[in-house]
Image (cartoon, rainbow, N blue to C red; front, top):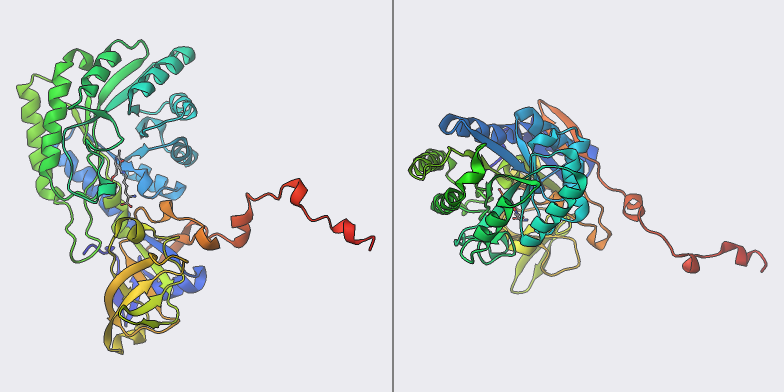
Length: 444
Ligand code: LLP
């Protein structure tokens, strides 16, 4: 199982990034998402350094949908990462943090005109075009704005990754130009006639939480064959972006993606095939999201009162749930956890289900986990929660979104403030005809 690198136990107390977990909850409350800066940086460097070693002409874009805020943008910029954004909102966050536009690419299967204009204005490195309509829209907007727009095509090889169906983005998904249906070739032809779009590469993303490296090799081959049909477009070189999707082990049963053995293989494949096809050597690009953030995060909860349910065992609720981590309910994601309190260790082990506090029977965070006998008020740390938890959080049941803190070298700093009830109401308005007119009572 992948745990944050700096998680350690000193005198029976747990520390992350040199910060005592129990103390963090006293300062910030629970639920609390704690992100370990060193793990984030180490994961980012792992990609950047290893890739450079096997394939120097390469780029890595952090898939910011996994966890995005201005502080994370700064870390990614410092590490030399690019960013993949998927909407005007994510682009706005990145630019607000001062992230260099020419290191950003924009995805999305239904970009609005506004997204496109914002992307062009800010001068991002490329728009990754998803469909035919979008090609037309960008052409029109580009002409009106008098801009030359670097684009990549999102193509979909005839492959389907083995992963949760919600995480597949292959030939049976809503994304991209399907290669087996001839859509990709048609789009390439259209692109070659464009007056304003400059093709800078081909992109494919097979899905998320993938363990099978071979499917990337197959995808690379399909996409390079397509690139070779349109050699005339690549006079200034091109990028082969194979997306993200590298699996993380959230628990003992899961396997993480073997990037170590994959890198030499994919590099070799791209080099030899490009030679064979007489193509310029492409810039090789990846877009990892989960594998950079997941292991860096730990969510701390305060436990509530246990309840025995006939035939189902013992349920112990936390003070959060699907509002701060919807992944168990949505993808049957399985997490691991440990009890933070020092004295808990002495207690006998038992098997319990960790429930959320939301009014949904499906709101269980962890089904059947063995833990020391837990009591109301104990602190629970759920591990590997750094990716796709906060960005998918909600105020369901009126729960404020938790604070997110970044820890490192014994210091904790806020990445995202915890919400208050006032924050939840901030965008509420009472229509005029529904307002209470206090003055009506004055005449009584
Ligand atoms: N590139 C593209 C175009 C993507 O759509 C994604 C993820 C990535 C890269 C990054 O994939 P990663 O390395 O993180 O697997 N909410 C789901 C995950 C959805 C992933 C969507 N696309 C979850 O919680 O598991």
